Image 1 (tube, rainbow, N blue to C red):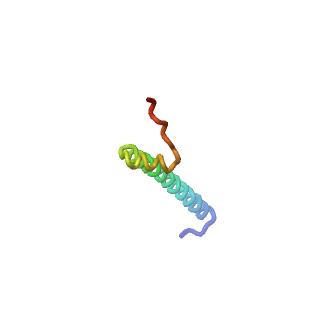
Image 2: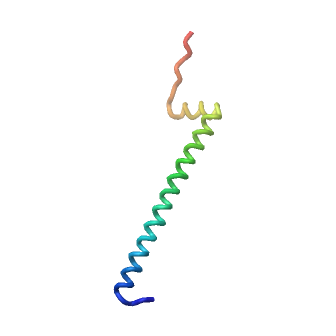
Image 3: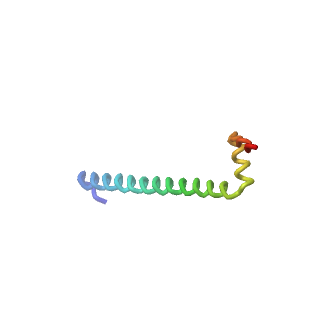
Length: 68
């Protein structure tokens, strides 16, 4: 382990950059996973009429009656 100031500074800067890179990648992956989960959930609700009706009722949406 180096003890001179310049080497320690470079190691600290390198560690900070590596940590920033890892956090950035994980944030991007988490965002993509969240978007994928929302899209998958919307697909499941859209393709299941019973679940779609239950979801629409849960959010308070009342469909307009059919015209006669």
